[in-house]
Structures are given as structure tokens and as C-alpha cells.
Amino acid sequence: MGRLPPQDAPMTAATLPAEGSVSVRLWLDGKTGAGTIICRAEVATRRPRAVAALVGRRTDEAVRLAPLLFSLCGTAQALAVARACEAALGIDAGAQETARNLLTDAEALDSHGWQAVVEWPARLGAPPRPAALRGLRQAVSAVMPALYPGKDGLRPGGGGLRPDAAALRDALDRMNGWLAAEVFAGAPPRDADDLARWAGLGASDAARLAARLLHPELASWGAGGTSLLRESRPDWFAAALAGDPAFATRPRHDGGPALTGPLERQAAHPLVVSVTDRFGDGLARLFAARLADLAELPRRMEAAIAGLCPAEPAMAAGRAGQAPGSGCGVAETARGRLAHWLRLDEAGRIADARMVAPTDWNFAADGPLARGLAGARVRGRDDAAERARLLVAMLDPCVACGIEVHE
Image (cartoon, rainbow, N blue to C red; front, side, top):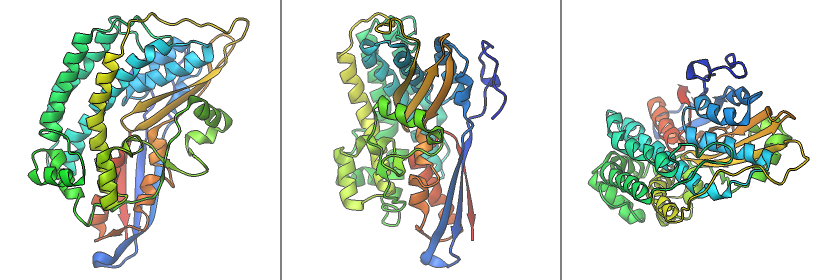
């Protein structure tokens, strides 16, 4: 990891460590034709522990630093750190949670949108369309000021919550309009039959990618049989991270690897259930879960807007005579569940900090990607590389990924 900025130094992206990369190395069994098998798959994640830059910082400073340390999902990163600080300081910010979840849902929609117009076209051999994100990002950026006029909702204790329902609904309408135009070209598919019809029309990059992934050779390809990460309790993540520093680099649930992300959240969605019944585990199921997540995020945001109430920042309470302690914060991202744990010293500065991100779960050495690749049939070297890229895109790492194929 690169040299960390000193305590109280100005926080800029140029002073912060790089976020790492994922490397995938595949070995084929040397056969030719349809019988070729990936006999070995190695997945290695190089994740500089940028979270160490939080050590020695004040809590409010750490929350401001988190989005600079992690350029993707910056809102979720800041929120997980803020929640960890609140747990350590005994701050109850429950009145802020509906608004905060609205912020991370909007960020997740933006992240999925980037995949839809940049990564998915690339998997079809089409040019990326980043300019198509402009309307979505304008709508997403309107959410914070419509909730917190002071843009202070992510600090420990939250901010002055003054929801502007009209502005929020306008932003949500624009998000729904963007999805209808750029992703679904109409209404989202409801089940496997509807998905096949929608894919056949090919009215969007997402639909054309669906048509490819529903091909009999690909629909069930990449099945790894990895358990879904059903755990979301901050106390569970706190015990895991505090008890074993290695958990951050090799997370385990019930003694084994686990998958987090859209499939975990949407496993019971009618579209995902129908696709799973027809194709089993694999690429089609993972893609159906991403489509379901895109469809459900605006619905969840609409419900959140209806439940918003004004609130004041929360203050520390209930720890009279006690020194600051430790705490864990959990937040959802488009890629899956994120957790930050930290411990404060007597002066209220961070003495230790650890985190586990979705990439740590999904791209573990024995995780969903590695399990989905090992033993899979391919048609040769180029086919192996492209299928691996498809599976990587469905699991969506938060860092760059390189793929090597050896025969």
C-alpha cells in the first residue's frame, strides 16, 4: 500500500492509496472442441488496506475521508463508517435511517446504471455509452439536497433532515424514466417467459445481453453453488472483524465462502425464482437478479419517500462515565454488503479500523467466481476468456480485473 497521509493532512485523492485489482488465471485441460474444461481457476484479489488511513483520525474526519479512499460507492462507505462511529459513541441515529437508506439506494441505482450502459455493451462487442448516464446522475445527485439542505446527512449522528417530498418524487420520476428508456425499453420482465420475449425484441443493450445469456450454452454456465450471505447484523460483522484480522481478506460465513449482492437480495423475486427454476444456477440467474434489483430499487425508494419525517442530528447518550468503545456499521451497495468496524481510543480518535467489502466475498480465492469457473466447459482459450469476463461482469468487482488463460 502507498504511503498514507499524516493525521490532519488535507484529504485529496492524490494522497490516498490505490484500491487494488483482481487477477484471474485459468488453466485448460488441453483438449479441443466442446470438451475443453477449465481444470484450474485461481482468483487473487490485491486489496491494499486503504482503511488503515482512518487510524488516528477523528470520527467526523474519518467519515469525510471514506469516499476519497473508496471512489466507488462513496456514500455507502461514508455511511458504514458513520454508523460504526455512532455505535462506538453510543449515538442513536435511528431517525435518520430511512433517509440514509434512500441515499444508498440512489447510489446503487447509479452503479447498476453504469454497468448497463458501459460494461454490458462491452460484453456484446458494442461501444460503451457513458454519456447516457448524464440524466440518471443528475437525478441521483438531487437526492441529498432534497433530504439534507446542508448536505450533512452522512456525518456521525446525521444532519438536519428536511425532506422535500416534491423534489424527491421528481428525482425518482427521472430515475424511472431513465430505466424505462435505457435499460428496459418499457416495463421490466416479470418471469422467465417474459424475459425471453423481452430479450428477443433486443430493444436495449440489457435485452441483447439477456438474449446472449439465455443461450443454452451460457444460461447455466458458471454455477458455483456458493451459499448466499444471509447475515446483515452489525453485531455479527463486529465479532467477525474484531475477532480475526484475517476475516477482512478471507471472509467466511458458516465456515465457508458466501455470495453477496443482487442475487442475495433478490433470490425470492418472481423473475429470479422463475429463471432459477428453468435454468438453475449460473449466468442467467445472476443477470436476472441484476434486472430485478434495478426494478425494485425505485419501488423501495418510493416507499422510503412516503415514510420520511424531519429530524435533528442525534447526540451521544447513554455512555456517561464510559470511554469511547468500538462499533460496526453496515451498508448496502449495488455489489453487496459492506461492513466497517473501528475502535476509538480515549481521545476519541480511531485506534483500529477494519472492513470487509463485497469484492472480498465474491472474489475470494474459493469464492463464487473461482467456484463458478473451476470445472466449467469451454470451447477453447478465447471462449474461456470471454465467458470468464461475463461471469466477472455479473459479480461486478469494485476494482479492475485481469484474466489470463493457459493451456
